[in-house]
Image (cartoon, rainbow, N blue to C red; front, side, top):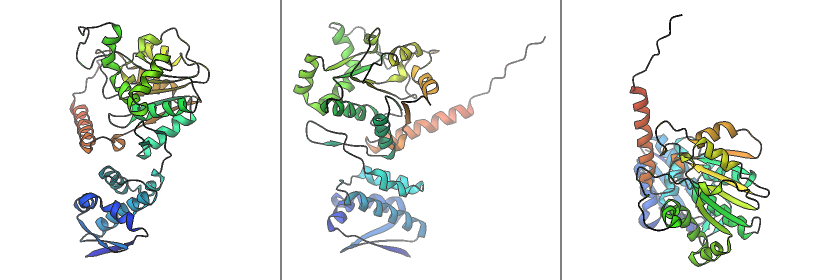
Length: 333
């Protein structure tokens, strides 16, 4: 039997680390096959395997560090800390502390929850154009909107412009009733939701009527120069190369652009290249343009979403490996 004793300075940290009905500790015990016990101002970790005890201890120490900074400990924190420890990156747990980007209408602070999200926010801060590529649930849109609202509140910009290409995910929506705005609203709903959360419905409507906030399909951007604005292009994987070039050249003075997308969810017709893929290749390395790649480890939705993404990735890899190779016959001179 192997064991480690972890001293804890604050009793509150023990409460936070164990979680409601010890749900956090149960996750650690199940994952590493150890037993974790509270002994007053200490936590004892014991188990049959020395490596499991070591990893569980590092995870608990990381959670204690997060708690000491005033952060609430959730099962999501626990799983992320375990993944960092398993990858040998437990030292990065100390880097998880992020500044508050924005406070929502309900008083909830918005900040990066993973190393990838922290890098994403830092890239937006340091660059004029940021390209964020990653799977669903990694907070690309939500954090970008938070940055936009923060810049607007600090009067660094005068307008927030949110746009996305009007491409259906396998469904045809042209029969929907109403005028043009009614028809495009379903495409833009995720952007509305993020703004409602940050500003509240009434404040959002007020700024919308004043023209400080604009939510529109990508086609509406053609021919414009966008000064003093924070512009977010969402679902950029569904742009064509021509649309992407049109969009990035809308940039005006004192503006920021954030381009987000997931290259595994392209809804363009077969044979059409994704403008997001082209933009990453063409624009990477240019001054004032940052590219951030988020992974399934940065997913902050239900933990099942992370497992679903990983399952699809494994399936795609197996299908690629098992696909028959096509050899082109050389033409005879």
